[in-house]
Length: 79
Image (cartoon, rainbow, N blue to C red; front, side, top):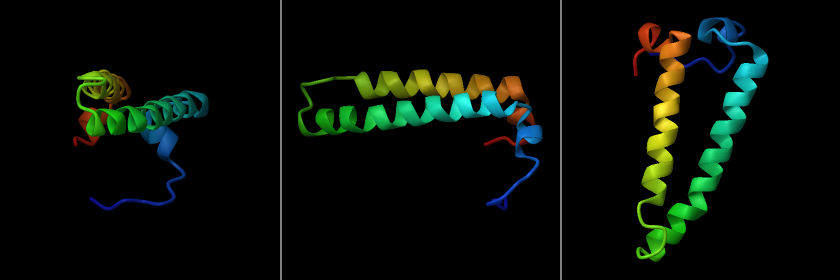
């Protein structure tokens, strides 16, 4: 599968408005930026924050997959 750096039809392809897409991107960025220090703390000190990185990622991936189904991406472009 070829990856496009510029795709002027992206919002149409994913079935979202600009604001819906921006909201999802900001949410995803926040989750991923938040999990980095949590995972590092847990990695260096395993007794702290046990299972927290896992719980965050499981919740995020559930929302990610639900979004892909809702927008039809799961059907059009399976991962």
